[in-house]
Amino acid sequence: MAREDKVQNPDPQGMRQLVTGINCDPDPGIATQQWQDIQMHYGLRGNRLAYHAVQSFQGYEVPPSTAHEIGVKLATKLWGENYQVLVATHVDTDDIHNQFAINPVSFIGAEKFRNENAFYPRMRALSDELCKEYGLSIIDLPQSKKGKSYAEHKAEKEHLPTKRGMIREDVDAAIAQSQTYQQFLSCLQRMGYEVNTRGKYHKIRPIGDERFFRLRSLDHNEGAYTQEAIIQRILANEAPAKPSKRPQRKTLRVRPYPVLHGLQTTWFIYIFAAGPRRKSRPRSHHTVVLRKDAQRLRQRAAMCTLLFQRKITTLSQLAEYQLSLQQQIKEQSSQYRKTWEEKQREAIGQQVKQLRYELRLCKQIASENEEVSRQVHLKNQLEKHIVSRTISTPIR
Image (cartoon, helix red, strand yellow):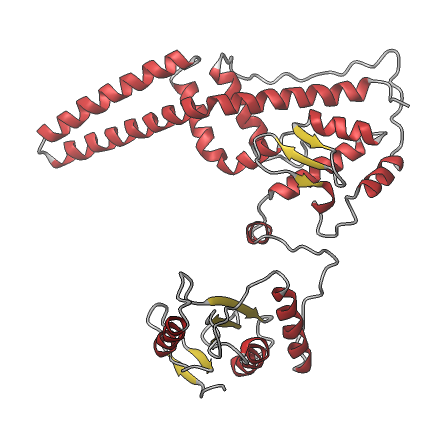
């Protein structure tokens, strides 16, 4: 039985909301105590006090009162016969949505609610049914049996690259460069992927990643990257033209780059590869890890700049510079404690801050240099493979 609705102001956020209690009091504090009493009564008090679910609506499509009415009907159909539920609808927000808190222990018997995978489609179907009754829009269900993860959904919403999206780009590039399915798999291996062809579905894993990705699951429309679909795309490729016996020479414009040595060369290539691409620059072939690292570009660019400014070319020089920084920090800190004039203390404090910043960069360079070197090596191997394919005769 649903209790009377009321409008309240919860302390944490100060947002007005409509609240209804189904088989319990609408006040969250009282309802929580009632849930604990039920759980203790049946000896099923665990670490989980309640389950949480959300029902969202499109913008200003529905007023809060109607949204709350729909939420109460949905909760009654899903849990009303056996469980206690709080239904809350926020009023002071543009994003109208219902929140459900469900006592996991039934009030009519020693039975716990099972949050199984099959429950979500049922909840979604009932929600769509109620929205249609009220003339509201619903989301068309894709053909895929598996939805996106929250991290992937958030990254796409913020227009950030996702690991699955970058792998899909590499697979598309490998398909475009191949004449047979075996060439396609070999191309993925050259790109830095581990290929697993055992079992019903072929899988690939980027270097440095812990899990494999099934090719068929790279797109949420699972028919686009099945083995049969990939083979059809490969067969549709045109055979590359044979290179002429005497290729024409191209005039190269040499840019005056600084002379680089050792660590400087490795980090400069890494920063250049991971940096933003101009529209006029052709698409480079980088590993998934290297493209993902582009999000940390600003921090690693500062490391590269430090190597140039301090003329550090080897790890031994880096270690020596770290020791000198530590000594300078020790001396400046001692001077700071002996100085009482405000301006001098402020100047010394800024110097110590800069020294500590450079010391952190040195430690990060030392810890990440092996991974950066590996990514640059993989990039070079990949580019050599791409170049060799463009000048070789296609395999029939």
